[in-house]
Image 1 (cartoon, rainbow, N blue to C red):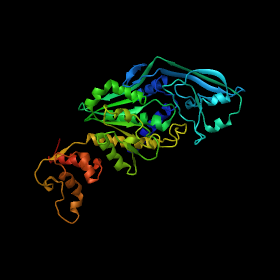
Image 2: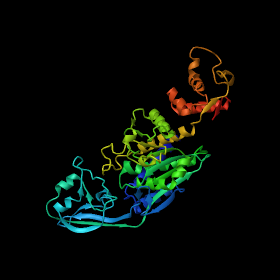
Image 3: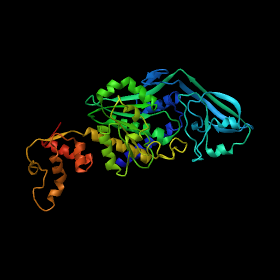
Image 4: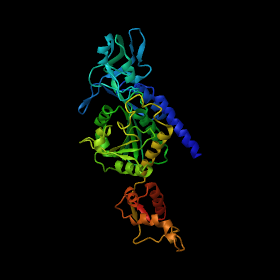
Length: 431
């Protein structure tokens, strides 16, 4: 039955990835709203928010809304050599409208390619400076012949709004665990859609749990400006309620796992995520705060100082397909999406189980009369209860379960069931 459930989950995540991949997203506009509409079908409690162009968010301003209908380049014979409809990476993000003939020499000033990756179309944007441009493979660029080319971009930049989605799942306490992922890149699979896909399924699981010790809040936002807007609107609430937070990005490929700490480096988020990754994928790559580059920059900025760590598989900027057309559905797998989901699930369970235990008796408790220790002392009988005794020896009311598990060099998911058993027998109180 479990196997069937796993296969169903993988298929569900994969189908969501396939649905989201073709959409042309940017910081603002219909692509973001279309993405959120699809996510809302999976998360009916998702609430959408619109923030008007020109709204200040600390040192930043919400840009104008960008819409694009079509874009292409024709050669002198009228042959279409670049077509936005075939790949939405072909147009520089936030390109102004243009419709004119240019010489190849003049056109080159508006073309972007990667000589080192001659088959890849790069992802290029110009959010805060007016320009237009096309992206193409370097092989295609090299093949262009002298002559006239007709460039056409049917786009608009107008007063509008930035859209983001937020969901709140109440728990037994007002303390919150926070998640953030972004929805602002066009058709890239690992860098863009893997985060929303995994987070969507994680939130469905959290909602299905019989009880949650903590409340949960998650946002689906445009990167950078979206997190800045969100923080500027919710900072005092986040400061007063958030005990842990996670930025989720690039979690769909089958390569190594990556951990990037908060700026503080010693928050509950860091502790729980590092613990889970260490026991799930010991060969993971541990980065430092200096390697930041996603929305952890905003959540952990000086004066903001929220406890947000970042979880990835291949970290953004560190894999060759990053920000190119090579980051497609061939790069991610249903199995990798599920693995990332399960690791985050374990991280949540670790935080939910992370009480501070205090033993209720002085001296070593007599486990035998409670049926917790072999009643016949022979060689090897100690082995079966060694972990239980080791755990009890650290239950002084000062150490939480994650700390105890780290000291014993065992995962918390092996410690927590023993704590529950000891509590059932009245030997442990949870602080």
